[in-house]
Length: 273
Image (cartoon, rainbow, N blue to C red; front, side, top):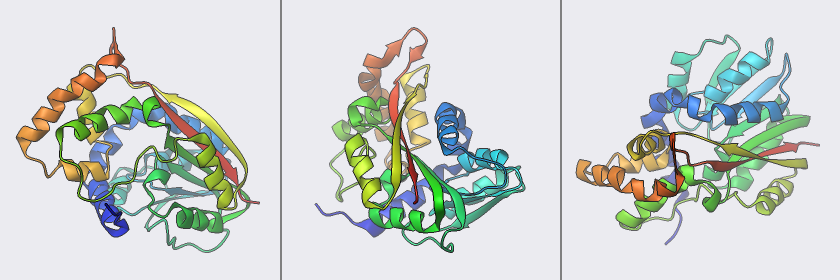
């Protein structure tokens, strides 16, 4: 089974356009992670910041508040998601630019910071995207990423994926794993190979509580990007079965307050020298 980069991008674009509003409305689930990523970025007044894989611009909006007098550009391959962000935006120092991360439409060395929250693992040619990120950063600038940890440590995503693998036929085309950068040594080596230096990896535990397996399943569908596009094409009876069956995968995470699939996210901080 071969990987089709163009098809993957089409699915990601369609998926994030489809779920843009729901993704923005579910931002509270990721609030602690966004706060940790922004803290690692050491944002300051007057800086110029690029937020890649921005979707509806939730992280970009928070960054805009932190760089008062500066500029934040929210960029994504999904122009519909950016439009949703523009509709919701309150900051006057926030701009939007649809772009493929492999071919960024910005001049060299124009940004002080680059942010990429839960996006790097979905870039097909990560080495090209990282080269572009490094190019648009000024010398001394920081790139800050968040990526899912290893699959066994990230049940917030893996519970739904295990259920999908169990109940649906194998995909016709190879898909990128959301956990492809979950190995710390591999993530660090990838950033070093891209020319970044002073790399620091910070583990973050993302803790989300769901009252039922069905609430968890809906939350997964509301953040699943390309998977959301594929799921939207399934018959209603298949979706209902997945919603019911996901309880089996979630069972180990049952707590008094509901279901709490605590998941590891790695925050990587890398400097352009």
